[in-house]
Image (tube, rainbow, N blue to C red; front, side):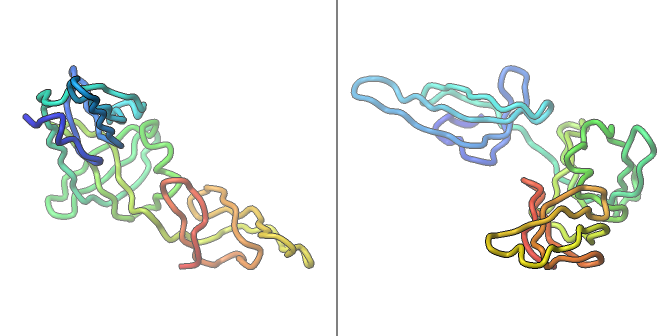
Length: 185
């Protein structure tokens, strides 16, 4: 058990049967009252964000999340298949649980699969990933008065906005948290 005073961003906790990861915490201590700790948390199963309130000194059960590096093998229709590089064990994760992550994953790429007591929670991607541009609109000459951008499609089928100088076949870095262009690779 950990004290509510020790909650920090990135910690995983179990609270009322739900599995959460702490996003942010704030401590409020006034004159003769007990400290109140508000924790902004994300439910690791549903992805919803909520705020939990604790009194200073409350005991909270930590959750031990296991992270295993795995390789994305293929899409089998309703499931995405991953393989552990050491044991060659394969697991399947429902495609509906990985809608956002699939925009950035290409076959044979390495990802981190997070599990809790043999329950697969999801996939963690690197902060930035290199993807090849497969389609790009032509740049319009004289369109450079401002930070002009155009639409482009990367190899996974995801559409992003890129600067006018990017052309088909170039490799660009894409931020996996917001899905935006972040530079050339």
